[in-house]
Image (cartoon, rainbow, N blue to C red; front, side):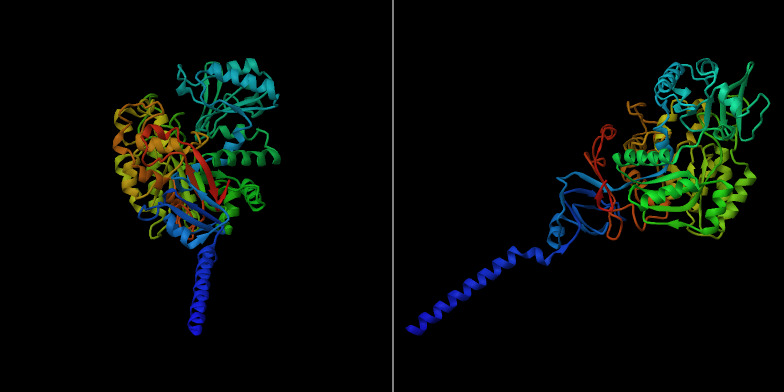
Length: 552
């Protein structure tokens, strides 16, 4: 009996020990999990992977996604000091603007804002108020659009001359393809009645120069505009980043930068003063080309320099786009090539033997046709060059097939909904049918890179999304949409703003989708843009923007 009591006592002790051990194991299970920098759980995630699959959670370490899946499985495998419970909010890969003017956006924060003006009188009033406040020696402004005014004609400098007889004034049109300048600016630039510049127009009337310069003549004014200081440049880049991050953008493709600005961006990124990623298209100047083409692409985790921005023609709104037949609202006027065709061919041949991508602005059907034919000719036998046509707005039916050859249409959906009020006036009822043909371009090319062209259009990517899927303005006009045969689906649109945009930048291996091994760039929204009524997309906002798994 004595031995039996001892045996029972020992068993009780062992059971207690085993129970204690099990409790310790249960309470210390986190020791068996992998520690990561960030966990996001309970989210509505559109991964934009190859299957366009959805997920609930992901883990991030060292700025990259290390696991994607359900909240349950991610929490079983990983632990972190930083856990974000998304509470079913929608998350997508970080948004990419495939064509914008990032640096210029920042600079515009330092000049007269003329966007949305409804008359020339309102333009003048804003300029007066700006100058009363800032007392600039050279007044700069941007954003006017005569198509938004009751009198849809280019203004003249008469009123500016009266207001500012001695202070030069240069006011840039919304599309960046025209200036309105006063006589003081014309005099400083030595622009006279008989001054001639190819690739654009200096407008005249019976009194002399009107003050309107379209495309290449604008360079004469650019040459006399005081260069911004280093402090102003840095502030411009920081201002632009602040605005972009507020809209969920994690990468911007800047369509035209000089070496000095590219190097400043790199410097700010390297010292942590700038977080946003930049795909830099090098401006087509002899100095830039000589430097970059001879050295090959330059790449960091935040900056990618491997493309050249070339201007084919001007813009449709200022009648500078090069058309095969005359403008319907200006007899005998065809627009113009900004870069002569022989120079485009020479450039294409030079870029084709480098590792660089050629990204050419082409809006009119004549410009698009020439650029597409040139690409087709110089790239024969070369694969995966991903050369782009920026805008690809008006294309003749017979030219669409060129996009089957690996050429990427880089388009801006809000151009369609901004231009639809007057595009038929410029092009006529038949030619307009092959303009802003997003769906047809997608069918031919297999991919679209979507952007805004800001500050020509607003930075807001939700306006891009809405214009692509609804083809209406923010007031819901037209009721049935504009040329709805070319509407995009929501899935196509989100791809165009993420993975396809990344592909167009040779960056689809590192961003554009929420997948293991890619940069942890993602955007959290207050609405599910893939399911809400289209009309609610324009009021959608960004809750948080993450780059490298860090909220910015």
